[in-house]
Image 1 (cartoon, rainbow, N blue to C red):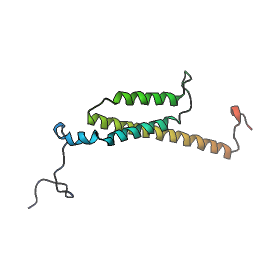
Image 2: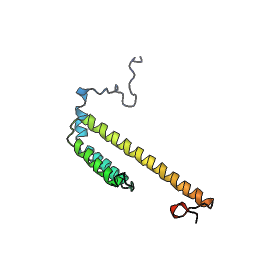
Image 3: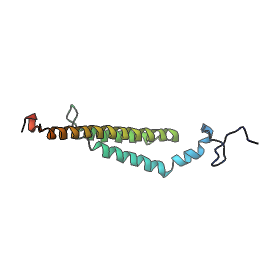
Image 4: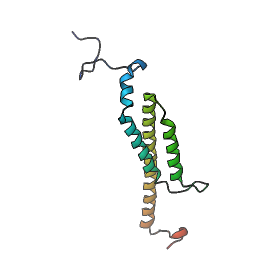
Length: 133
């Protein structure tokens, strides 16, 4: 007879519900070197992304310097965090933010190159200062 409970037939086990009392295995996993390597990978991705921001803010400070300093500050502040769920949330959020910034930057860069190519194709390539060549 068919049971009224629906289990995952691939492993024939009931679904796992994560509650504070069931996070012990997750805690051990998140405290492992995997978490440290994920954080280091994220930090390096942030630094690689930041170096593409060459322009300066209104005070004349290059954005890549400001972004690197801010990333360092955030990672230093987060270094003392012990809650594995908060750590995981920070890593996921950080990764999503970096991907979004990279996507927007790449879209803007692509649009700039398309505009340049369109100007060149129309014969309207502007020289220095926007003057016609």
